[in-house]
Image 1 (spheres, rainbow, N blue to C red):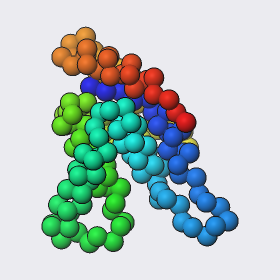
Image 2: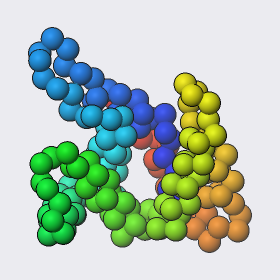
Image 3: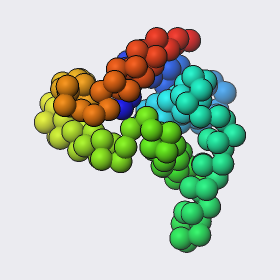
Image 4: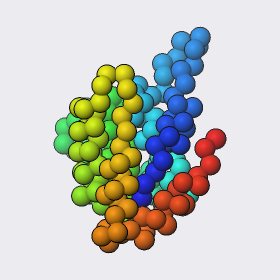
Amino acid sequence: MTILKQSEFAQEAERVMLVRSGTGERPVFAEPWEAEAFALAVKLSEQGYFTWKEWAATLADEIKAATDHGELDDGSHYYHYWLAALEKLVTVKGLTDREAMEKCKEAWADAYRHTPHGKPIQLYAYASSTLNAPSNPNRAAFEHRSRRIADLPVN
């Protein structure tokens, strides 16, 4: 299991999400989560969890699968495919598993439903109590990867 410090990726996402004011260009990312998914994929690749060639192939497979199922390829779902590719790679590479991702998604959904408007959503209690629990069979891998990822430089 891997725990990524949300603040580091939020900072990177904010950096890459800046709107090019005055240029008339639209923002690169429509929503903050898109920038965060982008930053996460870049950082995981930079740290050697997967190559950029593996990343590109997985993303291409996701886009192809969507178009094969009749989805319109107008670019509006690009980061949904990006996220699906990222989820697939982190599972295949053993950084997490589907069950842990689903539990985390459920915890986020519960957290945002119970967070007052305008307040930041926090998931730290879930992550530390569940993924770092002594009974978790992946705890050693979690601790090792958490240390490596916690040391990622944020430019």
